Image 1 (cartoon, one colour):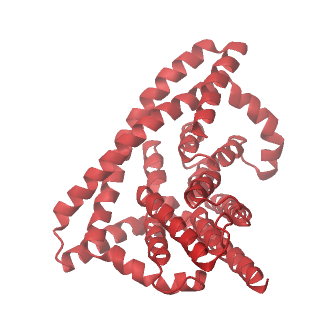
Image 2 (cartoon, helix red, strand yellow):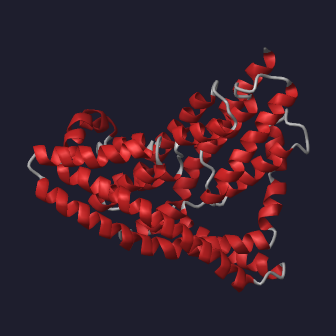
Image 3 (spheres, chains in turn yellow, blue):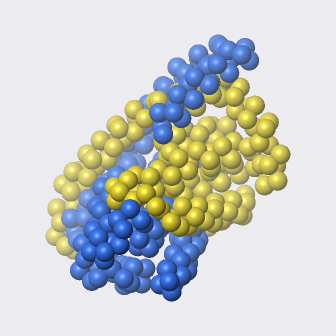
Length: 172
Length: 198
């Protein structure tokens, strides 16, 4: 699976550049223009990351995670992964940037290629911030009765999460 | 939301650290992680710029437009009751494509527009405007199910933390995304049918 993954990025790069060339796009100028936008995005991310990594760093050094993990570990032990993952899954429902702080903490502690690191990589790639998206989008439409949207959203997130855990187990 | 979360992290962390006698490690951690964040973003900046540069080519070459047309049958299947040519459909398809290509920052504005035009549609139908329509529910469930093809940010984080193969998660992540999206679609179709019966 990892070997096939390796072909995806080069294939996308090749296709996009070839397609641009065939359509007479000034590809290099275009690339530079888009890349400048990317730098702007990264710059905006710096600020949130400083705030959130500091927050997670403080929580971690304070021993809070150790306490939380002790409380959650019986549940996590059922699935065979560290309790940190449970915290991460919970936080991801509300805030993507706060979850990023925890993702990096998992990568720092266990390494991105460990079982917890792989669960994190896959599950964070296939889920979204359920409560954030629903509240912002429904607010825009001025909707107060949301009917079955939350049920469906949580159901799909649960499906992605369970699939991610099994896939990660299959890779280790 | 983030305000409270952050306040909890900082205040809770410092209090907990003081109570458990970890004040010194807390102080070091705060300074160190702020520095780490900047190092990480330098790696991020390169990878994200590469991606946005490529996507600019794709946009300019008409690839995004072509993909938008390509998913029309799929949207017709998911939203059969939106009249053809309604602005909601155009917004929804742009949002879906932006999601698929991982253009996160481009998804939200057009997604909000899609919700507004879905609200207009409800008004045209004469339904109460504060109740979510089946289309709104389907659109949001689809959005939450994640449609992203290549999780570029996660690859950047993995590479920063010394993964032997940062891009090795693309395929499993894609599989998990397909599963969550399939469940989302099945659920929406089921609820749609129930709504239609009433």
